[in-house]
Image 1 (cartoon, helix red, strand yellow):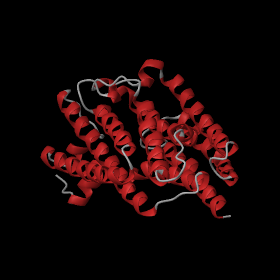
Image 2 (spheres, helix red, strand yellow):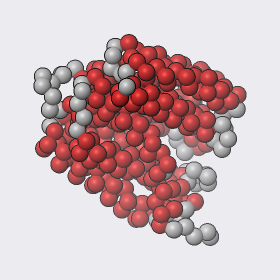
Image 3 (tube, one colour):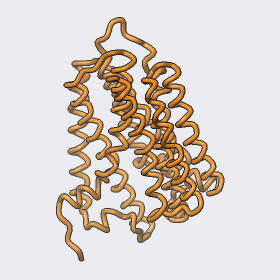
Image 4 (cartoon, one colour):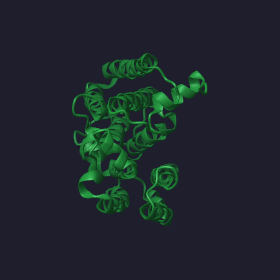
Length: 303
């Protein structure tokens, strides 16, 4: 049996390469706070960023842990069984997940005394969805609601945190910042939801074996691929709307330059949805849409 280092096991358990998916919405929220509200709190922003990343890794680890239990329960052998593949013990996995959760929760609680109870409220709902996503008797990931759950939690909640931690002390306080955040967060919501949707499209047959009946199972692979394409269209529409409403700088429209690249990778995936080959294009689309939005918004902010 191949031996893996602690770092390799940790990276595999928490899927550390995916932290970018949480980092980008947080940065977008901070950019909106800087541009629209003219406010930015560097210290608190960095501490909350650490909490967000720790929470993201804890949820990933929990997903891998519960997947392992389902694979063993159903006697299914799979490349996606990370604990078995990397020879990770259940005890070690639990300890890592608990430690990351404690780091995230501790920072969140301390910050709530500094910036207000809204941090705790958003955090509570994020933790609740994070647990229910893969835990409990009826986990969300086994239902058709996995895509919106992941999109809203990571796309909207994290954007909302990025905004609030930077504007909590402005006067007068904008009580409707959460509604405005929806517009700005929608590109992230849709491209992140598409990562889960594309993953479920690729794994639909295997998922059924372990009791998962996701959206592609109910609407069929063809219709799921249509939804995937619609989500990308909506992501760009809301990017335009964010600029029209002056929530982001005009230069943020530079993100539209990625449309040909996103179209090409999406078309490749639609023709042949495959986890080991074309799925990486869907992951790349997240970077194309959100990183371009961030870069052009930053340019517009300092222009």
